[in-house]
Length: 245
Ligand code: ATP
Image (cartoon, rainbow, N blue to C red; front, side):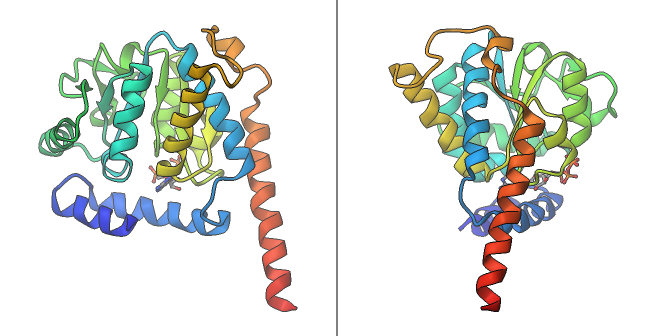
């Protein structure tokens, strides 16, 4: 089903051909993970929810793959935390930017930014640095699923907290982000939404607004990535034993 969504995204011009290759890398990791949410990813999801709830100005950065795979999820999350969606793509053409924005609006998205491009992320190449001043440029927390390493580093360099969703725990994005959720984008967005809903109902911890630093107490991203890798390795060891015996 995911592959069909991506192929449809190519046909409508929402996804770039390179997006298919990036998806392939993600699929390989999802296979190793067992196509389910790891315990470590659930822990990172809790930290991501805390950051989003503590943010003064959260923004959700959306590329073609994210728009095609998690359409409903990102729109729901955007409403839930009052964070605009901002289209921000690696292989940028104005036509593709417009197509993604129109598709999101047609599916019910309220505020979709990205077409003003009136500010630049310092330290990265021209086209990839284009952002909206009222969006990613001035955000304190950016949820950037399937981000690339350079841009993630540059956003952190601007003093922002960056939450990423990336199936590869070894990517530069995963290593540099403030919180890396090592999970598939659809599953992770769904989980973030349910944790935030629980917190808002007062069932979980962190219901009230905290400051950004406090929201990250008890969370260490490097440790969490190590746990993700350990979970993958232990699953593989168990699996290969079964194959041999
Ligand atoms: P980096 O620049 O961070 O070192 P990279 O060069 O692999 O990593 P890209 O190709 O720009 O980065 O981004 C694709 C990333 O997104 C890959 O790490 C891949 O594992 C991940 N990815 C692809 N599809 C999904 C998905 N459906 N859910 C979560 N992550 C995904």
